Amino acid sequence: MGYLRKEIHAFRDQEGYSQEMMAEKLHIAPRSYFDQEHGKYGFSALSLIYFLLLLPEEEVIIFLKNFRELLQRSGEDAA
Image (cartoon, rainbow, N blue to C red):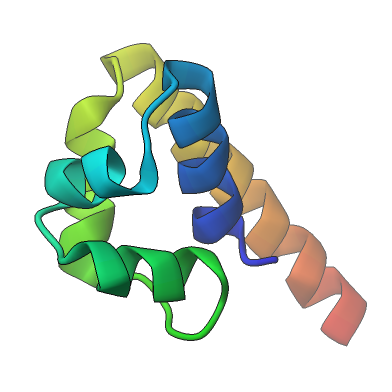
């Protein structure tokens, strides 16, 4: 499961949002959200921005740091 997909799904569960509610928060169609959550398509950059705007600033920093660490580990694995 991709990092962004996992984080958005965890956030939805934590907040108790339905897929329809989460789709509304990300400004996408419910069917599109369902497909993205299930890995059929990836989330767009715009969806990422809307997601980050839902998070408190401290959580945005944590999200980005964790993503950076994931990228660094991936780079080490490729070397």
